[in-house]
Amino acid sequence: MKGLLIPLILGFNYFVGFYYCIVNLLYTVLLTVSLFVILRHIKRIKYSPVKDFSFSPETPPISILIPAYNEKGVIIRTVKSALSINYPIFNVIVINDGSTDGTLETLINTFKLKKIDIVYRNILKTAPVRGFYYNPKLPNLLVIDKENSGKADSLNCGINASTSPYFCSADADSVLESDALIRLVSPVLESPIPVAACGGVVRVLNGIELKEGVVEKINLPRNVLALFQIVEYLRAFLFGRVGWDAMNGLLILSGTFSLFNKATVVAVGGYNTRHVSEDMEMIVKLHRYHMRNKKPYRIKFISDPICWSEVPENLKMLGRQRRRWHLGLIQSIMEHRGMMLNPKYGLLGMFIFPYYFFFEMLGPVVELLGYIVVPLSYLFGLLNSEFFILFLVLAIFYGAFLSTIGVFLEELTYRRYPKWAHFIKLLVYGVLENFGYRQINSFWRFQAILLYICGRRNWEHVEKKGNYK
Image (cartoon, rainbow, N blue to C red; front, side, top):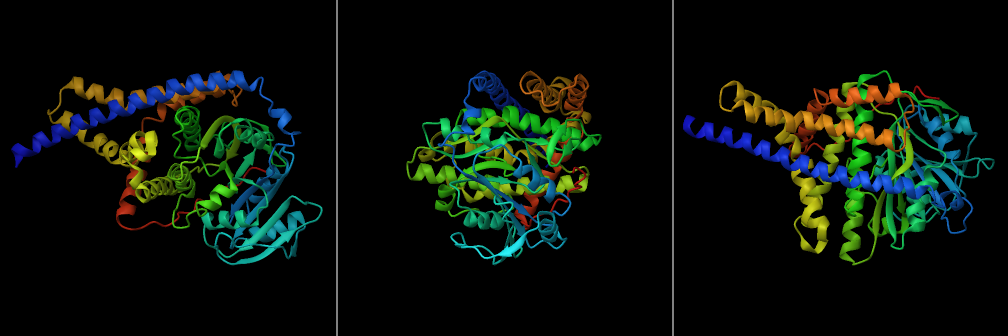
C-alpha cells in the first residue's frame, strides 16, 4: 500500500503543477487580449456617438428591473439612482418579493405611491402578484408586490410587466452612474448583428460618498475584505470578461447590471427559478437557443458603463455570496452539459465550456488540495525545492502579478479611483490578496461543490449594511 501511495501523491503534485501552468497560460492570453481590446475601446469612445444616442429615435425604451427582498435599508438610494439616469425613454420597475422588513411600506411612503390596477399578462408564469403601486407624478416608476418566490421569479414578473423591448437587471443595492445605461445600450445600436445581452462593469460601492443616489466622491473603503474585493472585481471585469467577449465566449454577465432583449428572454422561457444564480444560466441558455436555431447573435461586455454595488464586509456574508455564486455555476454547467465538447456549439462547446467545467467548476478541488498536499509533500521530502518554488510561483506569486496588472489596467484606462494613494493601496492589496483571501475563497467554492453533491441548493441571503444615502 505504501509503495502505491507515494507514486499517487507524486502524481497528484505534478498534476497540480500542470493545472496551474495551463490556468496561468489561459489567464495570460486573456490579459493580453483584454489589454489591446480596452485600449482600442478607449480610443473608439472618444469618437463614439454615445451622447447622440440620448436624442436618437433609434434608441430603444428600456425597463430597469429591480428585484427586492428585505432591502429596506438600501432600496430608496437604488431607486433614486435609477430614476436619475440620463436616458431618453425608460421606466423603473421594483419587484417586492414578499419582503417582511417594511421594504414595500418604505417605497410607498417615500414616493407617495397608490395601489392601482393595470393590465398584467402572466406570460412567464410566476408566483401570485398582490398589487401594483404608482404615483402619476413619477410616471416612470412602478412597484409590484408579489408573494416571495426568489430573485429569478421576481425578474420574470418584471418582464411580464415591462412594455419595453429591452430590460436591464439591477440589484437592490446598486447605484448606476448617470450615463451607464446609454453606454450599455451602445452595442445594441452599433452592432450589425443582433445583440441578445450586454453586460457592464460592477464596481465596489463601499467607501463611496453618495448624494440623492448619485456618486459624489470616490474613496476606498476602510474594510479589508471590501478592499480585497475591489482588486478581485478589477481583475474579473477588466481582463476576464473583456477577453472572453473578444471571442464571443461570455458565459457570465453579472445580474447586478446587464441588458437583455426581452423577446429573446421570453423565447427561452425566462429565468430558471430552480437556480440560485440566475444570471449565468440565462446567458448559457441564450447561447444554446441561438446556436440551435442557427440565429446570428452577440452577447457583449463593455468596460465603460459602471454600476456600483455594495459588497459584504464580513466573512459570514461573503462566504454565503461565494458559495451561492459557485453553486449557480455548477447548476448551469451541469444542466447544459450536453454543450460540452459538442462541435455543434463551435468554440463555445469545444473550448469555453470545457474551460469552465475543468478550471472554474472543479478548480477549487485542485486548488484546495494543492495548498495542502504540495507543502506537506515538500516537508516530508517527497518533492525537491525546485518544484516547490515553481508551485509557489504558479499558485501564489503569478496570481499576485495578475491582480496588480488588473490595478494597473484600471489606472491606465478609466481611473475611477483618482488619487495616487488609492492606486498604491490597491497594488498592495493586489499582492496581499493571494496570501489568505484567495485560499478562503477556494474553500467556500469547495463547500459549494459538496452542497451540490449533497443536494442542498438553497439561496443564501446576503444582508446589506446600507450605510450610503
